[in-house]
Amino acid sequence: MGDSGTFWLPEQASTIASQVDGLFYFVTWVSAILFVGVVAAMLYFAYRYRRTHPSERPTPVKESKLLEISWIVVPTILVLLVFNWGFKTFIEMNVAPPDAYEIRAEAKKWSWLFTYPNGTQSDTLYVPEGQPVKMTMSSQDVIHSFFIPAFRVKHDVLPNRYSSVWFEATKTGTFDLFCTEYCGTGHSDMITQTKVVSQSEFDEWVESGGGAKDLPLPELGKRLYSQQGCQACHSIDGSSMVGPTWQNLYGKTGHEMEDGATVTADENYLREAILEPGAQIVAGYQNVMPASYSNLSERQLTALIAYMKELSTNEAPSGD
Ligand code: CUA
Image 1 (cartoon, rainbow, N blue to C red):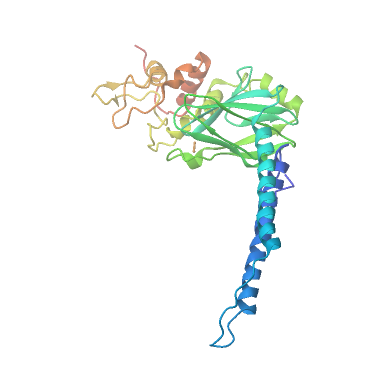
Image 2 (cartoon, protein in one colour):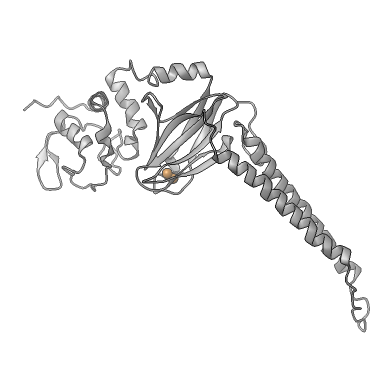
């Protein structure tokens, strides 16, 4: 990726980045110069006007109109300059161009899901280079925050309402995308990437459903496992997380429920567990799974179950 930014800031990869950085450097350097000036003057005066004889008394200082006016006028100009510069940039960052391409972002504990106009979904954000993109964002649970450092865009993602940011990527490449609002134990895992590709490559990618259209079911299931955020709560290696592991779950007999009942984890059980997570709670776990998975399509459900089958060495349960 060549350009990896400066000591202070990451690389610039959007149209707004140079304006944000310009303002940042201006404020930083003005502060540095003023700091050095004030400290130097303080040290000089402390030395220059030190008491040299025990009987010495300070002589009254006469005011200087020029000095007083300058230390009112100069800071005022600096403050107004920063305000004007910042306000203009703020407005530009917040008003998306009318022809912006719209992508939906959904945040939940602890993953991102991006939906493109034709229904294609991904957990990595794909955007075309040189095209304004408007993100319309919402959260399924708590407050998250959408942050792409290389684009210099950051905006809270809230439950029960939409918020938005826009940007125009200026170079192809892969850039980090963080959640930057503490949202619970998995907050630091709520990381993904932004892939900036050429317009034609982007169009092709969206058209192919993010490459999902022709995937075999277990592979699609594996992709959905991370894309839909299942991996935040269900392990595939047998370890117990917020929810039961998927390893050897499919086909498990004597699967114990909170109310003492035991079930066989066959297709129908798994289907209900995804669509209606509150219907039966597995013993030892909390009823915390979001109900939002009822939006999954039939193909997506089948794919998830096919993936669970792959993760299991149990024999297929005999149907009832
Ligand atoms: Cu989501 Cu932090």
